[in-house]
Amino acid sequence: MAEKIPYKIYLNEDEMPKAWYNVRSDMKNKPAPLLNPGTHEPMKPEELSVVFCEELVKQELDDTTAFFPIPEEIRSFYKMYRPSPLVRAYCLEKKLGTPAKIYYKFEGNNTSGSHKLNSAIAQAYYAKKQGLKGVTTETGAGQWGTALSMACSYFDLDCKVFMVKVSYEQKPFRREVMRTYGASVTPSPSMTTEIGKKILEKHPGTTGSLGCAISEAVEVATKSEGYRYVLGSVLNQVLLHQSIIGLETKAALDKYDIKPDMIIGCAGGGSNLGGLISPFMGEKLRGEADYDIVAVEPVSCPSFTRGKFAYDFCDTGMVCPLAKMYTLGSDYIPAPNHAGGLRYHGMSSTLSQLYDDGFMRAVSVPQTEVFKAAEQFARVEGILPAPESSHAIKVAIDEALKCKETGEEKTIVFGLTGTGYFDLVAYEKFHNGEMEDYIPTDEEIAESLSKLPVM
Image (tube, rainbow, N blue to C red; front, side):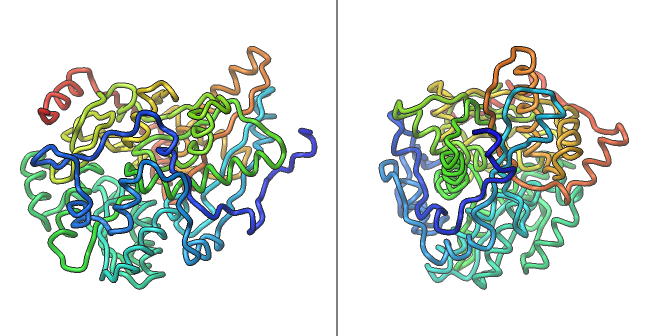
């Protein structure tokens, strides 16, 4: 069968999923509810609707519905770049000399350059359907901000983006793509919001974090009539929209009777990983199949591997709901590594519960090793990968080399969330030997965790 498998497996248009899959429907231990930061009571729909679009609130709180039909207008937009290819990494396998079979789901075939557009277009659609003027958001490396600005342009919505300051400075071209699509882009933390001013007073000269940018975006949304806040990762609704990645991956594998042994994804807030693994995790939860599911995070922001499973604020300004998740503490400011999309202090509540229940494992890797793997991949597979995705590449290569040692013929699938063509400053730092690996001390993490809200 192997020799008959093409280099790229494409689904046809009719095979593209018609519904998103909600993995929470198959979880016996449901993710803990979001809590009101003032009362510590579960958030009510009407409370969340002040911040989020009404339809997205319904998706966020639904733990039982297995499938949500994808509106036809969203499916029509998806057809511009979906179904995306599942690629057999024949050249990488040959270079490594491994008996392992390596596949990657490539999400970079759209203008935003990443998987983020899958949720951006959905959230913009629901905002437009509600009659809103615009939305606010945060972005790390810029993939989410780029995707949302593109989606808002499509639906003629205003888009205000708060971009983590270090990424704003490192990735000026990503910023300009957002502006091309009509978005305003503000480096965070900024002096344009009350929360931004407080953060700068407390952490003068800070390079920012996703937690900071979220706080500012939420403040602007709640103070601006006709606006709502939208988030590119972490939330249940985002994992729901991103499930199209995993659904397509599974359909492509099933087409050739391929059963993966291992599924690997980078982990920051959880959008890519959660989307990729959803249908496979569903099978695992239902006892229909078993997979080794691996989350890969940076050593500089190790929420899974060194964090605590506890209720915490989703943002540095402590204005968002409390979520039970693996966290390093909302006050934690990650080192300014070049995988901006993974610089978040916490992890999706859904993924955190699955991890805590033992359905998946996690590893952390240093960025210099990540870029070595990225370069190795680029030289044989012809795609310059995003730094975030390269975390998954690093572990996929490591696992393939283990197969070389043992002779095991494992089938490995990983998510290639996007391209790295706006990350050339990072590649330059790596090639010049200027890239460093920062590993937070136990004391730093303990200090941040000591500030978790008292429940």
